[in-house]
Image 1 (tube, rainbow, N blue to C red):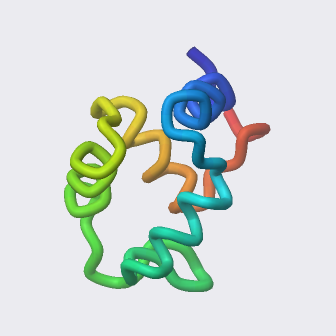
Image 2 (tube, rainbow, N blue to C red):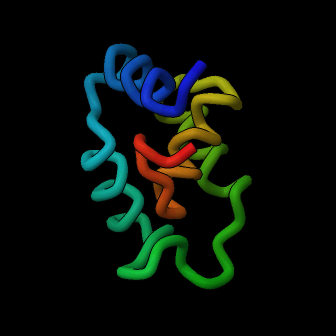
Length: 75
């Protein structure tokens, strides 16, 4: 599955766009202007996504990659 397909499936499941997830992660202090905030671990983010949105590990890791700066056009 491509990265974009993961993002599309997440949006279909949750109704939240990639920009929505970025904004929510910023509100929680997980990200700053340069990506993941210092000291924030992948597990903190994936646990939040699994608990609040019912995402599986692969989909949660796709959002983590998005928050780190991966774009849908990157391979």
